[in-house]
Amino acid sequence: MFFDPLYFMIIAPGLLLALFASFKTKSTFAKYSEVRSSRGYTGAEAAQEMLARSGIRGVTIEHVGGHLSDHYDPRTRTLRLSDNVYANQSLAAIGVACHEAGHAIQHAHSYALLGLRSALVPATNICSTLYVWVILIGAMMHATPLVYLGVAMCGMAVLFAVVTLPVEWDASARAKLAMVDVQLLTPQESVHAGKVLNAAFLTYLASAITAILTLFYYLIRLGLFGGRND
Image 1 (tube, rainbow, N blue to C red):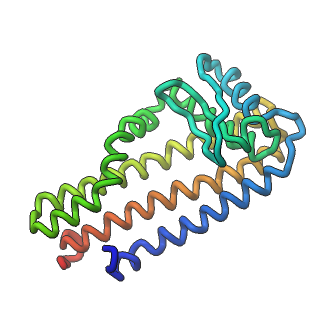
Image 2: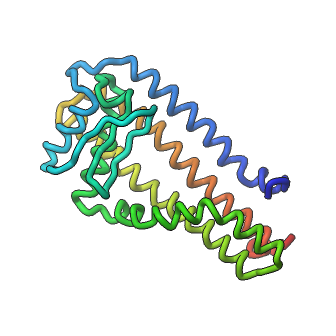
């Protein structure tokens, strides 16, 4: 695939969307990082307030280094917020913090797709790293079962990317509601903070589309779609 023009033709839409999503996320976050919330909550305080109002206890909120490295770890029930979010009072920081709090609420409420995504993580980490090599080795050895195994591993990466979409969308939806209902932001401020979350969702969408198109490429090359086998 490294020198196959067909590969780049097929995944081009995903790559272009990924570039746009990256630009949109960074520019939107930067824009609303300069806008301070009128009610003065920091990202950490907003997340804590959202969790408290939802009746969620036992979630630890920690500061973690890096830029947009925010995440929720369901294994330890820890919500980690990055340098630009944890102690920042901007609309962008509150939007991101509430999104991660949304994941903690999903976990507390046993949101099925979050559980599925978490269960898929170990296998996906292995499959997404090795599937290309499994396919290449299988092709060089003319070992069809090994090639099919590699394609199945690619399919695991697709499944993970697709399951991620509703999980992230739901977390953002919870955040958008809470920012107003819990009075963390004014309704107008919440709209702007929501723009940060919408931009971030594009990165997950781009990842899913790229994964699907990559699988589509291998299915074509194996002759399993369109009857072509090169």
